[in-house]
Image 1 (cartoon, rainbow, N blue to C red):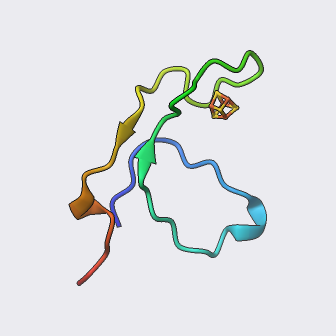
Image 2 (tube, rainbow, N blue to C red):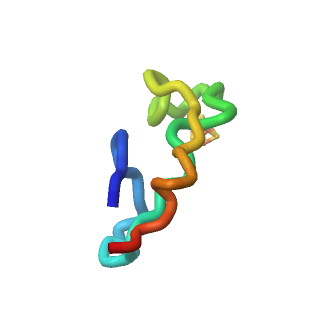
Length: 53
Ligand code: SF4
């Protein structure tokens, strides 16, 4: 599976597969948050949403 950027996830879900739909944050203005401050929001291309091999 293709995944870009830093992964932020709940530690209880570490064995769950990830499906990246977007990258970054549409809001990106919360004063306490720097998670996506250097990332421009973007939808991942639809062909990258599904893993079929
Ligand atoms: S907390 Fe961070 S990721 Fe969540 S909405 Fe605010 S800026 Fe975006």
